[in-house]
Length: 372
Image 1 (cartoon, one colour):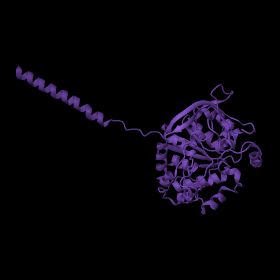
Image 2: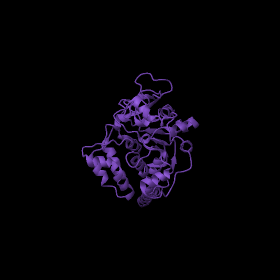
Image 3: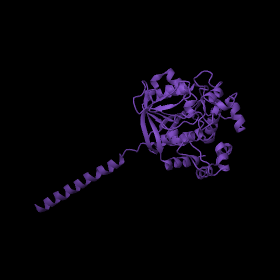
Image 4: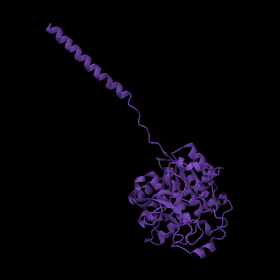
């Protein structure tokens, strides 16, 4: 009897061990694969220039593994749309990202006759601490192709897409509801035009991020207005009053407190290897200023907006307030206003960045320049 019991116990233990061991093997074989993070769909709306600052912002977005840069829509601002288109195409060629579409957009401010009367306006309304006027300071190019050939001494390998940026913005947002982030680092004409055609796109976006405005800070083009808003206040007002789920501004409040130094300049310069970008660097106004004066400091404006998309934790201080734009043709034309009290009807709240983590931004910059 004892022998039979010992045999039964041994058999039961063996069966139990086998039963517990087998599922471990089966479970390991069925372990689910780790899903890669979904990329952020981005539309870049820019008044493009070579490298700093729009060009570098574009490079950061186009080379980031976190971002799916859907397209680049060009608007007047720093440059005429023809020049901006040529610049965007040259950057994409240099990066080997000619798959990203470029579209030529709005090339005049909303106010009729503004470009023709801009110097008279400047005389009557006065200047801020910057005399810079971007596209207002030189004649409009004949075409983007002529601009490209004149500047880069070669023939472009691609051209812009034959679609109006406003239609592209509408279509891309509707095809990707609640997913698209718009990085708006130029004047607001393309976005205002899209909203005029279809106001329903605003709540269908995920977020809009601007380099624009001067809310709790002085302006630059005039004592009250920042350049991107000053050039087309009517468009800016339409865009800022739209019902976006989230609006985040990198205004002069933060941009004029975070310059790069000569040390930063040299650190970035040594990383450029591609002849396309070496040529841009040598011709850049900032390069000349730093080489003549090691105490020079340069703001990097649009870079901060792109950096935020890659890593929102760069923001260390912000305020959340209703905002608006003065579009009355007067001495404070283009002023952006934040309301600590009751705002006018129709305004929306926005995140207004005041401080950023400089170390994180500089690390992003060095990472981007390592790809040039």
